Image (cartoon, rainbow, N blue to C red; front, side):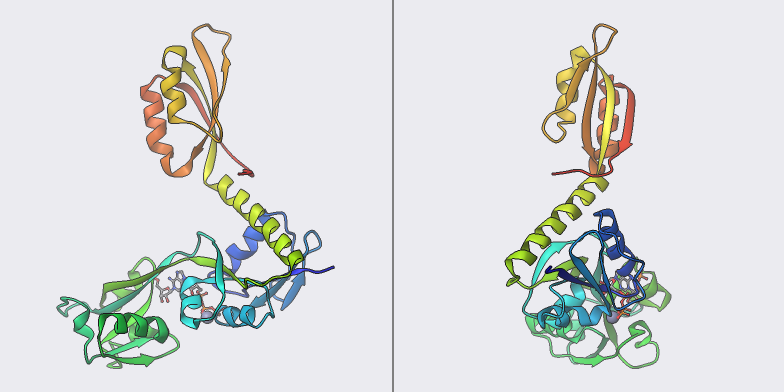
Length: 285
Ligand code: PRT
Ligand code: ZN
């Protein structure tokens, strides 16, 4: 039986979430995170555990059909495969930073200066776009210490909270790209593999939709029912049932996590009572 092969990071910032998303999609993995390959007993999937930097090339070379990797790594490798799905985790940005006491008026600052980075391709593209000639000094790690030891006058690196920059006396001056984990893949999969991929994506989307939504139950005075329903339209439309006490209805619906607090406030202002909010396990969209 043909199986879909997915490459995920063996250990690092992406690995735990990549494994978790497969598990939640009902794809059991024999605790194989330390092995090179494991085969799921519950789904036609083979998992390859690799260094993130190698994943784009392995997918390009058909060693794996799809992979989960940071968009920054994918962009840096410049391979000819596509993003299949944005995964919504491991969000970060790629930024230029300089010593905090330096004045900064724009990217021209970097003209003729030396920048240390592990991402020379993305940096060069940015500098070329701005017409800036700078010297790119490629190093493989601890980029943030480069200015302090006199190796470079600026750095280009991954930033998340920004605290690494601050503790190294640097300030972020240009955000060059936003990044998150992405699923990458080849466009020319066999029909069977395409089917397996579609099933996998369907399951992953159901898990993500569930995580982003809550089930809500409340009691609404009938004279405010229309306004309350308009606030919580749900997947299709809310369920409305009369309460034993006349003049009141019970309303059941689904509410997205982002709007949650704002809408709860509005519901209370409209006189909704007995509001219950329940997590959703899976949501088939
Ligand atoms: O061993 P392998 O090669 O597989 O892993 P790796 O060490 O190359 O990568 P890893 O696991 O560190 O990161 C994998 C991916 O996670 C990256 O390619 C990004 O897409 C994503 N990611 C998200 C991050 C961060 N957030 C992050 N904060 N990767 C690295 N960092 C580092 C950054 O380099 C800097 O040193 O954290 C520091 C900055 O963090 P703040 O919060 O202080 O700004
Ligand atoms: Zn790496």
